[in-house]
Amino acid sequence: MENEREKLMEETVELVVSLLEEKKYAAARAELLKYNEVDISELLSSVMEKLDLERAVILFRTLPKDVSVEVFSYLDIDEQVAIINAITDKEIQFILDELAFDDMIDVLEELPANIVDKILAKATKEERKQINTFLNYPDNSAGSLMTPDYIELKENMNVGEALAHIKAVGMDSETVYTCYVKDHGRTLKGIVSLRTLVVTDDTVPIRELMHTDFVYVNVYDDQEEVSNTFKKYGFLAIPVVDKEHRLVGIITVDDILDIIDEENTEDIERMAGVIDSTDKEYLDQSVFQHVRARFPWLLFLMVSLMVTGMIITRFEILLSQVICLVSYLPLIMGTGGNSGSQSATLVIRGMAVGEIELRDALKVIWKEIRISFIIGVGLSILNFAKIIFLDHESAAVALTVCLAILAVIMLAKTIGSMLPMLAKRMGIDPALMASPMIASTTDMISVITYFALASLILGI
Image (tube, rainbow, N blue to C red; front, side, top):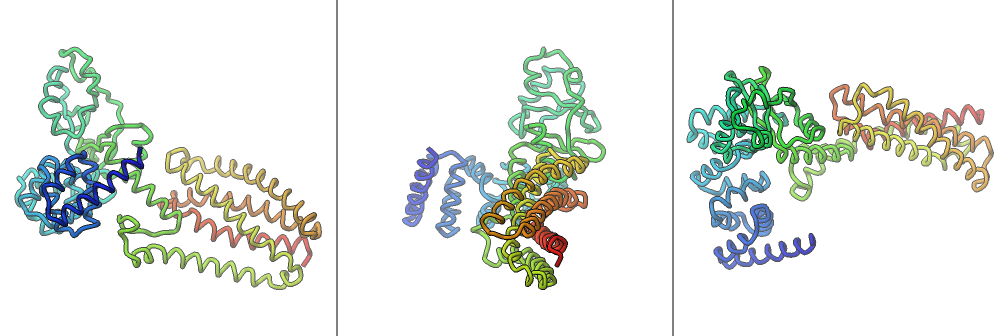
């Protein structure tokens, strides 16, 4: 079904592009309007990639006004800015007026200062104050994600008055399913669901129905903390308060889904050793942007491998006397790196979803020690048999290699589980302590451990 849809969308894109090249804008518009707003935004994005921006903008302008605003809200921010820069001030004002407040703030943050100034100049004093407040919240904070479009109720209302108020303002609100009860000083006193209101008698006071034990976030909380709160409680919306516990906005689940996607992408990039400071997709970034993102980590890892090479050089005499030890070196280093990366990945994932906290450090260490011992013993037994019966080496060499495997696995898993937790304790993203960092660290430890055991057991 999905393949059929993709094929149909591709055919539509080709048809629309062909119609635009022939300047048949009405026909192209008719093809787009066969789809819903989400699909139209996807089609328009594809058209913008294949054609010059001017024709794509003309097509966008032919859409009905209510449809064009919805389509605009689903476009990537780069495409939104491109359209804003190509249309008239009046059209810009209409789109921003019709957009949800949080979507409008996202667009304004990306626009040139001169265009933002024009928009603010046409806004009312109250609107300017509200927009400036939201624009001044730090990037990646709860304040930058929230919207002020929520259902506000008063403590002294009854259910009938509350439902009448919801009917009056509901269409302009981000969500009507959860309502927020405030006092006259804007302090958040409680929350009440629409379901509760609908099934309750009209004369019951709101203060008797509202929940006063509710979860909220602060305007300056990091967006990753906010996304973890959504995942933990399964909310559709969460209130955002300032330091005086005044309700200033709400964050809805559709906004947090984008943040979860961003955070997961960022973690994957860091775990792969990529320092990416842009929000652009892979194909949208230039070659030099990719180089800048990857080069620093690779340079760091190269230097760490140089250190490992220097350690191996220091044991040159030992290697010359028992040359077979060299053939087992990749086995030792690879096993250490893989073991450490396994533990690091599981611990990072556990911290990301809230399963592991910093206070669990000793529990994690004790569990990883037991796991690594069992795995190390199992792999050592298999390698001992291989070295004796297939490689025909001495028992001393087999014992050296197998003890090194056991020791390296235990050290690597302990380090792999502790480095991410240490990073979090220091305020560093734990994802930085994944595969590249763990591999380079365990390589050095593996070499030192292996050759130290060889010196001790073989008496060299």
